[in-house]
Length: 233
Image 1 (cartoon, helix red, strand yellow):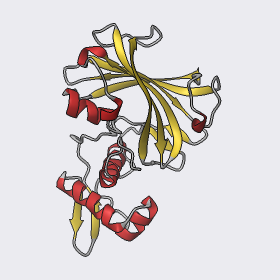
Image 2 (cartoon, one colour):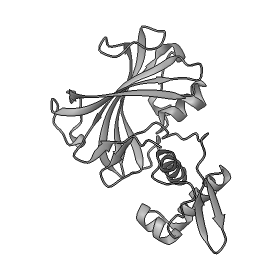
Image 3 (cartoon, rainbow, N blue to C red):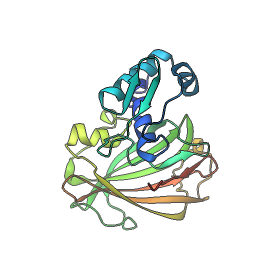
């Protein structure tokens, strides 16, 4: 049974490559590996990879030179559904996927930084995987002023894509603060760490196109498998 939250595989791959370009893992002018080698490394078919590369070419992120190869074109105006995702596997990168654990409307917790206009928020709990490996546990609070309800079945794997297409909300900026915090008691066993275990936790405030804070979240990272990475260029 397919995951209703999942983006099509070729879109996941194209968005992953845009993320790698934005983060500096792939630099302007860099030649990508041969397509068969690249597809093997990503665990996908050559046909799926070529569809992803076609998408990148259409968006202006790739030059495909006949007989020479595929070359990266970095763009400062890139918009990616993974643009603000900063966690990578220790070996680098990793294809992000997300499993929604629960969605509920609640009064905002006092422990979160102040954000938005409503006293309530939509609490979205997710388990984020990289290449299928549980890496981040997320508790995301969307300000309730944007919508009365959030239907879990309508959520896309990328919340920012859901915000954009369903709510007309574009996340344009985010601020992260890293600290150590205990893993919450609702953490599923699949995460690999016991509730209460000390974790690196990123507290994020996200801002919409009107420059107002729209969302706040806690993101617990399993540092046994992944790390928060910010590249400065």
